[in-house]
Image (cartoon, rainbow, N blue to C red; front, side, top):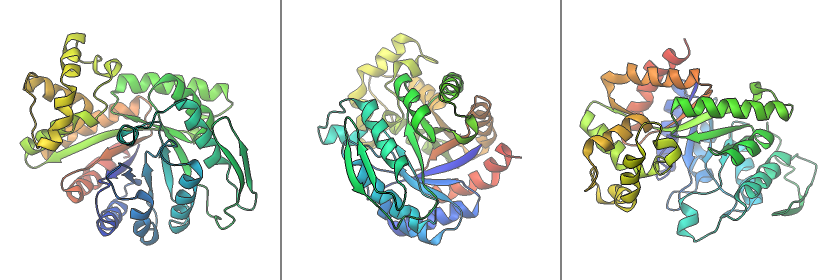
Length: 337
């Protein structure tokens, strides 16, 4: 199973480059940068790393075709891919916090993402693109200068319709914060879709986005993981009730506003929710603990690998250099002996 790291999209270009080169040194497969509304522009912020690295894959996660036209996404991606000499990839999604911030309505979400994927996958240097979709139309798009290996295009997908579409149109999926039991079910369903479309699993990637918080101070790790629970795909009953009761989920849902406020208020507790319930969420949705517990986290990752995961994307926050070192020295050799 390949390991990728998701670096804080608010890091400077020089910091992104330094950490990305460190990840490359330790054999990490990929570096991802999120595209939040208040983050640095991901294509530009990864450009220095693209130019100075040699092996590591890199790209933004997850752009959407509602706030950025697919052709503008394509131009940024192909430029980054040129700098990286064919190592740029991208994750396309159908939502994100930018839609809420900009009051954009994701009408016909699956179809819109599908057409975006089709546009990105149809670009061929020297052959002007003509695309007449239900959502997007493109005439005479001809990036003749883009001669590198085409980027891989993945879909941020967890639910049935998006998964089926991704099976037909994309190079893989990136799920988010899913336990092994749900990953196994999704892998089996997507494999069936791939077969129906005449595709094999060999060229399709199954990735899962997760938080990684292992520090010398376990309290620090737990506080960080709890603080960011709202951004861990928390408010999905179909996920959370694999390990909590419906009543416990109702309690979580009732305190959604307070949970989202935790990073802003720099707190790791919510009035009305028992601390042990928040800790249970951390245990099931993240990879968190003391550095001495790394073997337990490796076991968790091996369970995900057994469920069919080919890749994992680990979000790093505080002290990403130490996390990259731990992943390179302890985790990678255990996952791929």
